[in-house]
View 1 (cartoon, rainbow, N blue to C red):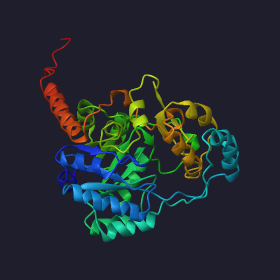
View 2 (view 1 turned 90 degrees about the vertical axis):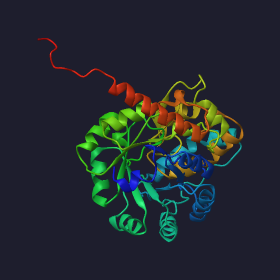
View 3 (view 1 turned 180 degrees about the vertical axis):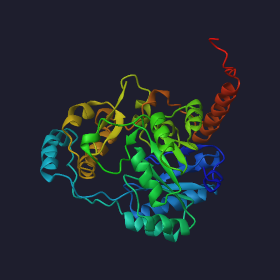
View 4 (view 1 turned 90 degrees about the horizontal axis):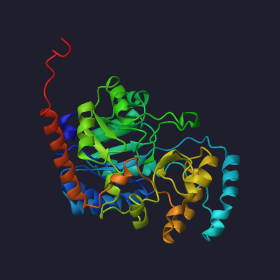
Length: 363
């Protein structure tokens, strides 16, 4: 990885920006203070809300941190399909005694306004999800002194990231919790996700920019594995979701290791875009019928998710989680960074202690 990026954080550990109130300033500050790279999630926030969180974070740490933006989405959702899904969710609205949200509540997530704030008040790192910014945007951020990263889920997407001029690519395997950062939401590719180690290998042979690996990583030994495979750092989300500094609902945190939730699936049930979460009642009942319509479905189900959380009902919440969720540890975020770093060192030591192959076998 370019020294400009590695110099920002001594340990190869990036805290994933988890939208929806999880990646709060106290979490990002704790990770950065411990030597990782903490991240704020600007998704679903106003530009001013993002700015206020940046100010708060700067009051908590002087160490580098990042901010993540969602790319605006093209208008290709089938409004009739959204209406059919809304009718299907009428029973949920009645059950939780709330109204469904307005599916036409906005598509761009305040992208331009957030960019303006980040250009006027530069932060060390900005990452992007759901697409690739224009070269002009990435160049403008570079001139402001900001390093940029963009999520990719295929080697072809990674090449687009490199061509746009990003400093690094976040390579997201299918194991990752939350939304897959595909550049184009194509339902025909829903079951074609690539595992992280295979994806790192493909991207390494396709691009020259540094790789940050994401997807199901919960232990330092896994970080050591992706570093050995060619990544320069690892991005962990679910591992930090369980920490006390995380803003996740306590029901969500407890569900990660609750034996009731044994597996995860990619689903469109809550947002209209593929996202990995713990399999619960809502996902089972509505996932097969949810249309490819983001952010329309996200807006539609927002009141339902909030009502379920307020009621402490895990069966109606979007319990985003990666495939390694059962390995979550309820450690303070700073301590978790220290433990992960120690596990990385132990894994490297164990690897170096292996006997070298002398080539004489079978002779």
